[in-house]
Length: 119
Image 1 (cartoon, rainbow, N blue to C red):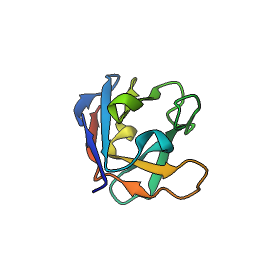
Image 2 (image 1 turned 90 degrees about the vertical axis):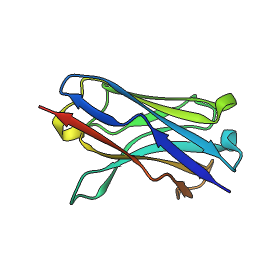
Image 3 (image 1 turned 180 degrees about the vertical axis):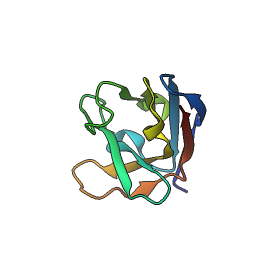
């Protein structure tokens, strides 16, 4: 059974930091590119960042570039999102997703974890 389980969300003050974890199971993690998305209430789901299956390549949305870092440990089947210099506009449900390397569509999705940044 495929599972992506996010954790680490919570309430943080503006300027603070938070690390999100996404633990994967039920598929060959090292064969999949991983990404983080976020969705704020009443808004579309937005891309946050991506990491290749080897971890050698990352891409970020302009809105988080320089503040967020994605990493992964394939031996632990886990991808991380380190968030710093948080702003109230970062408030959203954060979801991780997996796609087989070379494919366009993200096949597996987690349920998400809430991040709330207070001003």
